[in-house]
Amino acid sequence: MRESSRGGGSRATAVLELAAALAVALGSVFLLMDVLLTHTGFGWVPFAGVLGAFALAYHSGRYRDTRFLSVWVAAGALLAVVSTVTGFFNGLTDEPYGTPAFVQLLPNLYGPALHLTYYQYGSGPLTLDSGYIYLPLMTFLQVPGIDYRWVTVGAWAAMVFLLRRNAAAVLLVGGPWVALLAANGFNDFVSLVFLTVFFATLRGWTGRAAEVVSLGLKQFANVVVVVYYLWHRRWREALLVVGITVAFLMPFAFLDPSGVLCRAILLDPDPTCSSGNSAAFASIVFTHLNYYVWPLWLLAVFGPPYVVKMRGPAYATERALLARDLGHVAADGAPAEIPTWAYLLLPVYRLRTRGRRNVG
Image 1 (cartoon, rainbow, N blue to C red):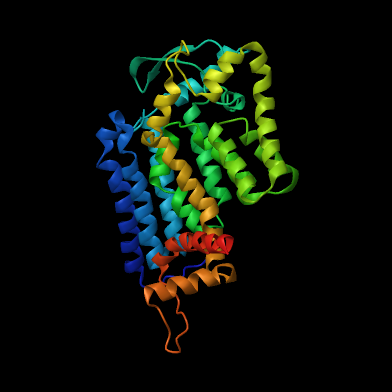
Image 2 (cartoon, rainbow, N blue to C red):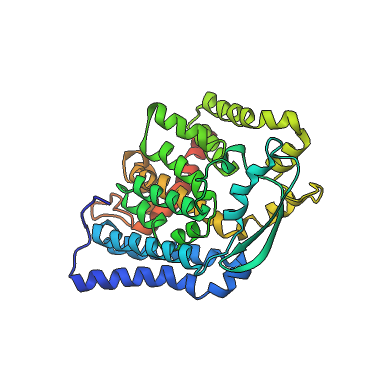
């Protein structure tokens, strides 16, 4: 957020551009407010709203304006605080009640199911009957006596702060919709803040410690780290991630191996662990509201450096081929600069180029 504004224009223009971005981001949420409380399958709409707001701000260059980003993040923070305190558009998940309470199952964390009765903003009693399907550290990362929603809001704020030097990243994860998900207490934010420390900010032992903690929280983080190492052909580190994950689960596997297999591997929260819920989980994975935070985070952390790489010499061949295919040729016959939207096609051209090299 320390970058200066690239997009010029008057103050009125800046206000209109900010209003347009907020209207797209917030409008997609408020129009579906009642629907989202009962039907999470429409979560792709606010996700698309975030991408639409990003596209508007990116096209105008306003996303580099620190004042623009400050208002953007402030709007998210305000909505998160109001939602947490008053219950406004809250109650999208039982995770702020279940995640801290699973510690009651120790030492056999993956054995019996948790049977919990709770009240939420005066409504209830509500019940939760579920096995523990996360990795062991998730239930431990809480602040005793503090509503778990404040933990997730704090994790969101820390994540935005850690990404503050990357304007595009702040725009993607610092806005109202992502902040509102944090206010609802989705525990994904606890995993994401440790992943952010590892990938985006720190190195050395501090970064390694953050990586190890992230591997004990939620399985998505383990997949991200393994894929990252495999992509960079760092085979030893990828195997080490698997080893650390096994080490976290091993003490509980001695107590209840079938429970670890059912809960932590197959992701079946059914109290009897016999419903085959993992198949149902896989079929509805794209309907969970909180899961859309992960692709936004991936874009925020890995997208900007990849775009810089695509604009550099590493993709010169692909840019030339794409420019010719699009008819963007300079007067001297050399390939001209491709439009911004065309960069979405460059990964496809990279795969095509590599395929031709392999055939050759």
